[in-house]
Length: 252
Image 1 (cartoon, one colour):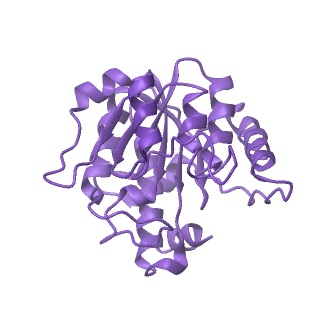
Image 2 (cartoon, rainbow, N blue to C red; image 1 turned 90 degrees about the vertical axis):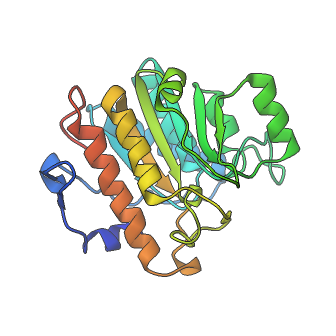
């Protein structure tokens, strides 16, 4: 809700692309009610919701707190599109098989995604030994964000790890806490606004973005400015996903 509320105060015009993002065609759906039976059932509910939307050739954008929503979205999109991969911008590996005795949580979301389709991670700067071993065993493309002199991965190298159809998942803790403190598990030394948006823009030029999400905003853990940043990022994702030649004309 905080992202939706903040978006009402943003300019629709994007001077970088010289477009009015509202002209693209944005529809905000009703909130997806939580499934009280447990996270696995909630993932299934999200999958069913996303299936209904992408079946009409719409680009889906999910806004959420818990990163686990990504799993349901990817399940649905992988059934709709062939040659799909997921780019996950996240400070954490999220590659544990179980966390607190559950297969379904923010700490296992990337593990579940890579069971569905190819996964590429950028911005990781906090992982467990279990996750590091898993990355090496599976040879998962993971671009770590080093604490000293962090640099963006080569776009050419990154693109070689991504398929033609790409789903982008942004956990807001990938950003530096100096600009995004409203997250549950902040990590120092993250990416800047310019680095994240530049990376997404480059990918949109050479790949088809078929869906995205922005997750893990915790409004009570930081200033109101964080919700505005998240809303602006959603606008940028909509613009980049639909503006490039060959992409769909509408978004939802």
